[in-house]
Amino acid sequence: MVAKAVKSKAHKGFTLTEVLVAAMLLTLVMVPILKGLTSAHSLDIKIERRMRSLTLAEAKLEDIRGRSIYNYGLDFNDPSSSIDGAYLCRVVDTSAGVDLRSILVSVGYDENGNGALEGGEVEVTLKTLVAKRW
Image (cartoon, rainbow, N blue to C red; front, side):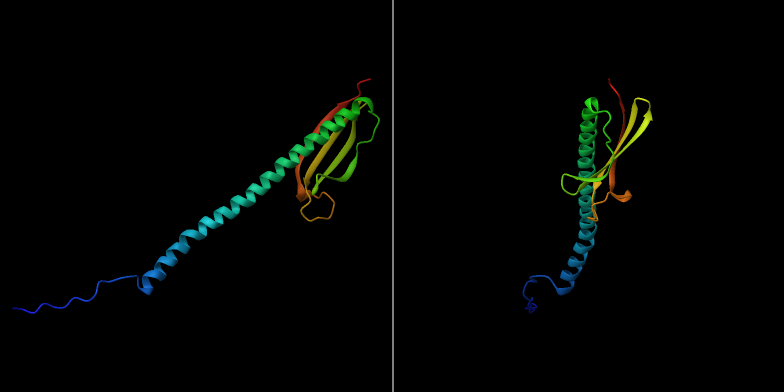
């Protein structure tokens, strides 16, 4: 009889090379996914701030409209005031005719924390005309 070659034990586990290749492939796949999640999160924060700014600007504009019914002579100018924490509001009140005023409301998130609403911080600007009723 011919002697049979003795087979070595069955191959169990992974080699170091296989583990390193798998780790590299996993890293190549995960980096773009994590980058996408990070940018989605920052976009979500931006959208949330813009929506909150819009809600606050609408509320401020409605407040001015309501107060102007009986107090048309009031000056609504406000260079910068804090509303709802870190959100700031600027109101510009100008004459647009004999019995007509133009009201411009700008609202944004105070990113640098200086208490002043600057150009890069303005999220929403709304404009309306207010007429003298009587």
